[in-house]
Image (cartoon, rainbow, N blue to C red; front, side):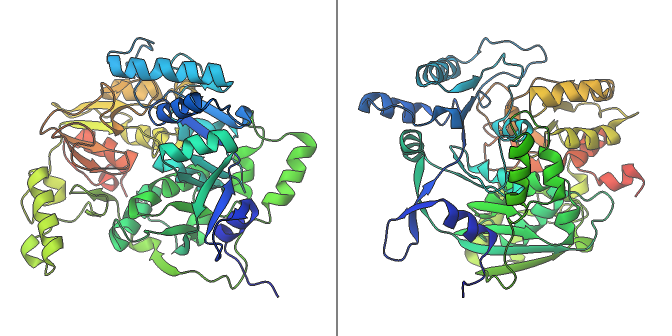
Length: 473
């Protein structure tokens, strides 16, 4: 009798081309699709050129410029940074020479890779997707196994359509109950990271389940799977359901007609077997989750917005105590500081975590009829050109502009200091992004992670704030 399998095991088993060790823990894994960017691909293409190799099945690849491009309100192709310009030019040359479709800076479908690929219908249940960005885990929202790989792996994947892959331990995260008003998918995943730590899922692939997950939109599940990597997971999944099918149906690159019907039959079977065994299980109660913010320099250094910064003297472990001291010092905060008293200089809504249309709608609901606090510079960078057009069609851009936000073009922008959207030394930012490491948004910049609605609340109040007070919850 076949043992019950997790969804993760099913995806790996169905894509394992060959065993590479006696136990089968390391396999040659077939990759259905990959999206490439200008930042992580150059060395891989150079390796192919030097070896005289071609790309195998270039039609399963998509190139997107997203990391280094400017996001000024008026789209321009000129790059202010010579290094970035060289990356973009070499990327365009590689895509042209190897026959890969490219969405360059001026393409009407340009955007952040993890926003663009799903909105086109390129990400589908049951796929294995490897790409040169750790937040490829985003695609788990569709029941696809996505994970980031290094440059040498990208070269191997381009040439062969496979990667050498070591199996992960399946980890079940069950979230039950109804989310309270003002609490979002971003708060759920931040609560998880705060619970298990930044290394709590190291060596694991998370499978999200429970009534809370089922109630989330597909975009909310993308946020969950996107940030799962911040607690060490190298994969994250949620079983596909009717919401996923509704999201994918009629997307331009999704199957059509009879192929769609066949695909739905297959996708509907993608779920863990009853009795499947997980290496670890974590349970969260939705009713206990509150709007979250980070106070430190790691995504697990987070708390309810109603909380205070921790006191290192209360930490018994010497290593953790040192981490707390360093984080507080970098962030310019004292122990016991009420989080809602922390004033901000910048507010940023964007990134592959939270720049989809649903995120922008939630931010607009908070900002409508309000103004950004004096002294705060606020920016909204939609996740793709398509999201930007949709937001404008719904009139959201007018809400943002009237509130005092900058309405910019799509790209990774201030998620990371790799373009001209950066924090200055000592500037403090309320951000909807995924990482708050030292210097992540600019040398000396201080980042507080939160949901888009919470960023909007902070922008209006000029400090970290509980969005529920503005929503009347």
